[in-house]
Length: 451
Image (cartoon, rainbow, N blue to C red; front, side, top):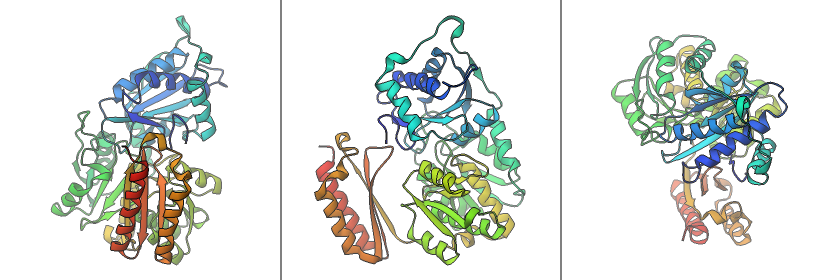
């Protein structure tokens, strides 16, 4: 993890941590590094989510990009995967998404995409960081006619929606679906997409006002959606996060279908259709034990990576796989998208329902979910990246792994986007793993927590 960029771009409290000055410098450095071998005037796309600070950071990024001679093309409010897709369609040299994804409104972030539409690899991010933090004097500002221009891409949202529609092999007539847009990027385009494909839609949390993104809604707060599905007798519910690169579902009974179960459904369906490359699905170390058990029973290979959709994607590219994702709902269909795409995931799930004739609950039942307990420990920032080097801490965690034995597993890791240590324990006995998780979390908080 770098000095500015975590596992999913630069992120922090907007304006006070992720400052306008830093956004401007990221715009400058990214434009220079990502377009240094181009012989034409560089073209960089900028998308954003609905949070109130996105306009401020957009202005700072544009100033930075244009001040070093690149052109900035504004996409407006679009999902993160739209930026990844449109970089290719618009023949741009790079793309930027302003979003803090599922985080609350005070946070914001900056995600960078290369001209290929893929997120940047670590080496390029490090080069951008070095230019900003170590050698800012190398950033050459231009003037006169050499500065960049600002353009608006007024058809960006529709171009993204039409792209997804073209990848659907059926219509959704007769499907009743409730959709939670998290008051975020999906609030407008999800209406165009799902109604355009013929579904009977019930939208909730699709009236963003700049302050209500992810506010007790979306994929991290699904209670209202589950209730809405049952009360309106919908066949399924779909929930996105703030920038719509995640999707979770709930069945007709109001039960949540998380990313692991979605991957099980897609793996089985794609294997049956003969479209699952190398009979493999890429998952992370946080994936539920139930998925691995299902995959083994259906002769599907589960390739495992570190947590983070960028690592899932790297493994997919390395092995030539076309399906992968995370429990959180980041699902990557590499044949159609270069990053996790919540709306594409939702469309694909409805497609499976239509083509199999199965209810959402029937599809999800192929995987038994093992109890899983997650405790988050907020730590003092001075311990980020170094807490795990304490031998005493590692011995303490290993003792509990031995106590749990073969009945489950313990995973203790640092968040890539927040000052948190995540303690995850999975096993057969909920009471036992809950006690273990709380005990470990309390010990970590005592030693590394904010005093």
